[in-house]
Image 1 (cartoon, rainbow, N blue to C red):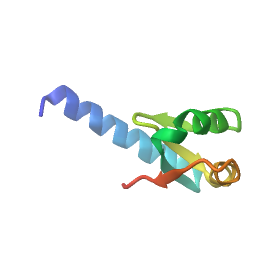
Image 2: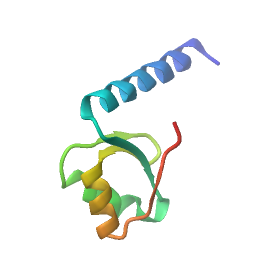
Image 3: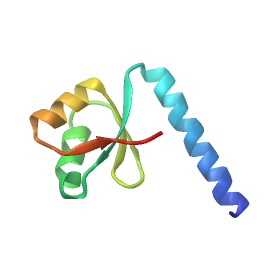
Length: 79
């Protein structure tokens, strides 16, 4: 693996860890492809989230409730 790619992955992992520590109850979720646009809209218009590649987001508990209410399908991302 090229050194630049490895460093980028390490930096992204460290950033995610920092966000989790600062935000308390944070969940890493991945929106299903069919719900990506609607899910993005719900998340973007209802508070602070962190967007990662591949329809992946770091969200709070309140966002999970909003997605459920809007019937947006997601899965908890694996660590």
